[in-house]
Image 1 (spheres, one colour):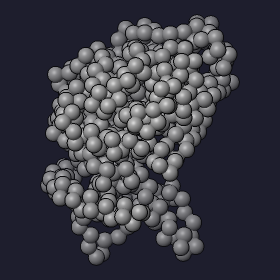
Image 2 (cartoon, rainbow, N blue to C red):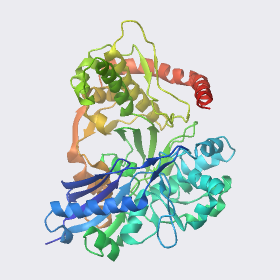
Image 3 (tube, rainbow, N blue to C red):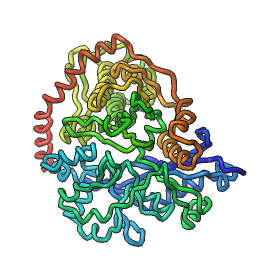
Image 4 (cartoon, rainbow, N blue to C red):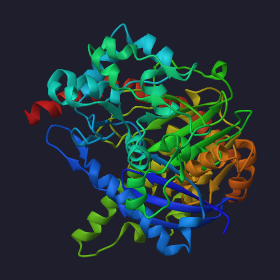
Length: 521
C-alpha cells in the first residue's frame, strides 16, 4: 500500500496527542494521554521527561490500533509541543533533572531585573521578543546562580518538542522559532545569545543545539524509537515549529500579504499576525510580545499573549456555581454556559469595563507587569450577573485589540480558534472590536495539523506552503461573523478608556502586590 498518512504529535501542557491526517488534510484519528506536572512551593513547575516520552510513544502505538496497516502507510511524523521551559539532557542522552515548564516562576526576579537593565533594549531589538520568567534564557541563568552542579551535568538544552525529537531520532536540535526568539536574531534566523553574557551565564552557550528547519530537513526514526512506537525504523521525522506557530499555521494564519490575524481564545489568549518579511516587523515601546520564525521563507509571526483568556470566563462561572452551591444547587460550567450568549448580548454594552488579568502571574501582553490584576471599572447598583459576564466578554475583546494594536494596523480578517471560538457572542464582540470579519477554525487539532503541514512540505507532498494551506486550511474555516456597526462604535469610544485605566492602575497594582507579599511574610 502506498504511504498516504502524515502524523502530527502535539505535546501540550494539558494533553499529549498524536493525530493522523490524510495527505489532503483530512483528520483520520486521534489518540491522547492527559499530561501532568508538579507544582513546587518555590514557584517551580516541573515535568517528568521520561514519562513525557513514554506517553508520546504510547499515543503512537494506540494510533496503530485505530488505523489499518498504519506502519506501512506513514509518509512522515512531525512533532510540536508546548513552548518555553528548559529540558536538559546529559552526554548519554538522559535527563539531568525534571523539565522546567513555561509555568515555572523561579526566574521571575532575574527576568524582571534584566528588563530594567541597559542590555534589554538590544536584546529586544535582536529577538523582537520580551523577556519573562517562562523563557529558557533566564531559567539557565537561575541554574547558574543557584544550582551550578545541575548545569555542569547538562550536555544540551532543549524544549519539549526537541526532547521528543531526540527520543525519536537521536538528534540534538532545535527549530528556528524557539531558538531565535529565546537566543537569536529574527532577521538571520541564527543564534546571537548575547543575553547569556548579560545574565552572567556565558558557559550556558555550549548547551545550545543546532537549528534545523523542518520544512527542509528530516531525520529517520531510530531503531529504539521504532521499538517503542511500533512504527518502522527510518520513517522520516520532522521537527515542527513551536506549538503556537503550528496552531497559527493549522488555523489559517498563512497569508503572503500579512492581512490575516489568528487569535487563540483558550485558557491563555494568543494573538498573532504575519510579517511577510523582517522589514515588516513592528516592535513596540513596551518591548513585549514575541517575534517567531514562521515555516515559510522570510516570514515571521508576531504575537502578543494575554496571560488569561477564557480563564476569566471560567472564574465568573465558578462564582455563579459557588452561589448556587451555597443554596444546595449543583451546576456545572456547561450548565451555566447554556443560553449565556443570548443573555449577555441582550444586555447593553459599554457600561462596565473589565480588564481580564485574572492570572496570578500578572500580564505579559501587550505590556509586562507581574503585579497586574483583573478589575471591573464602572459598577453601578442594578447591574447583575449577566452585566458582569458581558463585561468579561468585552474585556477579552479589548485585550485582543490591545494586543493587535501593539503589532501594527488591525488585521483585515481574523481566524479564531480555541474553546472561546464556540461562543457566538465572543465571535461577534471580537469582530466588532477588531473591525474585521471573524471565521472560527472548524479543525479541532490545529497544532498537530500545522506540524503535519510542515512535514507535508518537507516531504514534497506539496511544492510550497501556499499550496498546502489552500488544501489543508481553507476548507475548514467556518462562516464569517461580521462586525456590528453599533458595537464597533462602542468599542472605538471606550477602547481609549480601557487603555488609560490600565495605565493609571499600575501604581495601585504594585501597592496591592506589596501588601500581599507582606501578608504572606
